[in-house]
Amino acid sequence: MKKILFTLFMIYGFGLNAQQTDYDWKKMDPKQRKEVINNLSPTERKKLLTQFRNNMVMENLDIDPSDKEEFTDVYNEYLESQKEIKSQFNSNFNPETLSDEEAKAKLQQSFEVGQRLLDNRKKYADKMQQIIPCQKVLKLFQSEGMMRDKMNERKPRENVNSIAPRQRQNP
Image 1 (cartoon, helix red, strand yellow):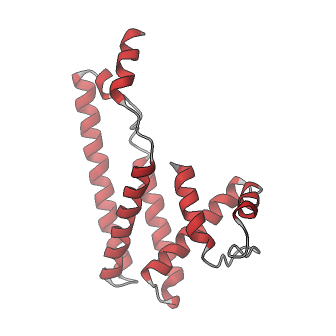
Image 2 (cartoon, rainbow, N blue to C red; image 1 turned 180 degrees about the horizontal axis):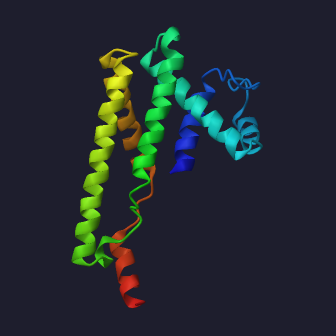
Image 3 (cartoon, rainbow, N blue to C red; image 1 turned 60 degrees about the vertical axis):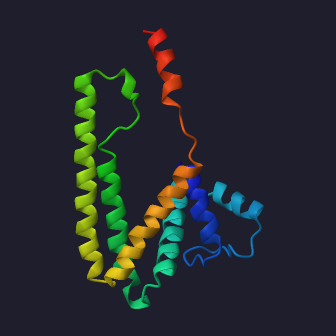
């Protein structure tokens, strides 16, 4: 999923002017772009992805230039805090192999994490509204949902039912 997200941001970002790099992404052919990206360190790739994502958000929301830096800081802080909360729930399990107690505990944990994500989103929506109008905050959250839906469409689904019989056969 990270590769798909990275690719989407890279494709979109190539149309933007990458101000912090020396590369003219618009004039590079796809092969050249891929070569440049492959030669970057993981830290540089992450920085470039963040830059492209931020440029995409700023362009999509049409953020006033005087508010860009402050909004970018709050937006990146929001994304990091959401990521931190999500990391507290391990979704890599097969529900069919859980006992009733384990399944209930996992379900309760998912509700708690979901509530913390929602609370965090509300907190940052308030912070963002101090910088940009609430219509743009709403548009941001709406575009996040659309991006998530697109990512889920492209993400290969693992058939849990096909896994469970193999796990039962090998105790």
